[in-house]
Image (cartoon, rainbow, N blue to C red):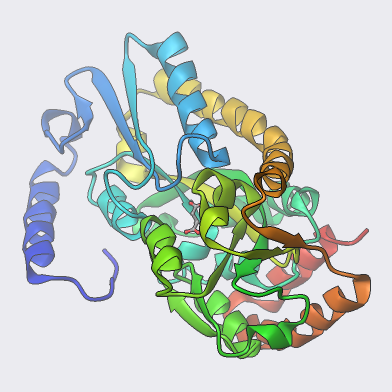
Length: 346
Ligand code: LMR
């Protein structure tokens, strides 16, 4: 369906089996047991994700599970697997494509092997805040972004916010010069890789469930993430400084396998779609507040120091990272970048 890096032969064999099974089942989804999905008349939605239940995504996923159970409990079961306990994000995209799980919410930074459009969300200092992201996603670019992987059999159905990213590490990063030579964990994104190289750092792509230990053992020096992720995953216990840069965005694409989604009876699909939209509004209204609370909790913990920046220091960060935009302009498309920029205008 699409290329992934370093597939083991075991995985390849398993996928070969899955492909055969999918071919055999084509058009007969209800009679196939694809380890979930439709079994008889009941629908099972397995929903794995990587952050703890207390994170913004964890709360949204649990809310979705609760509302579905309240309203459609006799016909649909949602099983949420948080904290990477079932699989990491990369594997979940693959599992979704092969019908092993039915819904995921993965950071927009992690799709660049499938579409270059979401790279716009990783451009440093693209969005001033979550309101700007919301304007962009709800504007004319929204439907195009949700449909960006339709040709791969994957359908985006909503965007969920987490928050704005901060840098953390063993030193204050009030100047980008301080990042020189430090190893930073980043999500699996080429834009984020370029961004760290731009400040002289050493980027290390790494799955989320491995981050705490990598920070604790010093396998990496620092990382970038939201306040809410850092607090709920306890990263503040193993990082001395957080520098409040707000330089990027973390948010999610809620994604389904198109074939599975279309196999759901129309009335039920519509009700599920409505619940997802309602839960998305609920989650997105709370995201900024959850991040502000997490920031306050990190401060109160006394475990790490929070460094705030002057407008001049922020300008220095912005200017240092700006060349990354040009580097990815052709892949992302100038028009999409311009639309995103407009959403961020005061
Ligand atoms: C990360 O890997 O840092 C984040 O994408 C985790 C998440 O899902 O918020």
